Image (cartoon, rainbow, N blue to C red; front, side):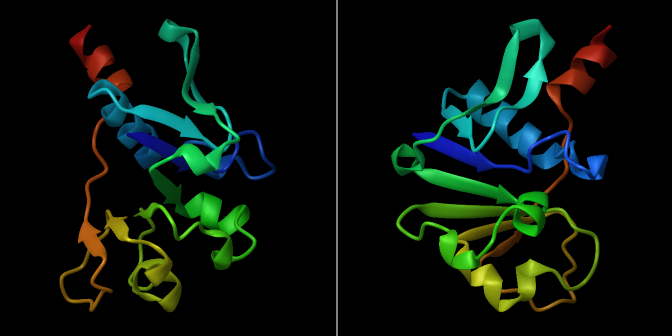
Length: 145
């Protein structure tokens, strides 16, 4: 199975979105269990491996699952109809606040939304599920030292 991540490219005019933590964690986990991970751009250089965690792949038609994050949606997606509905689409929604794409009509472009600031008192779309930030391998490795 092949997963394609859609992340906002690093080194853009607003560096506050350069570290897209949840995408890095999910990509690490998927790679660890043997899945192929690619992206819309090279993202997150791993010094120990001398390469990117997410390597650019221009052929989106070969991916089984497309994974988007909010910085990509906000800065790179021109129209929600550009989302390929022939594959399984996941959105990582880590935005803090009550009302985000998770409980809007645009949320229905995604088969699954992983929301890290889930509030049980909000009525979310049926495709929204609680999610955690998690800890990266980089943090675990540093703690092991």
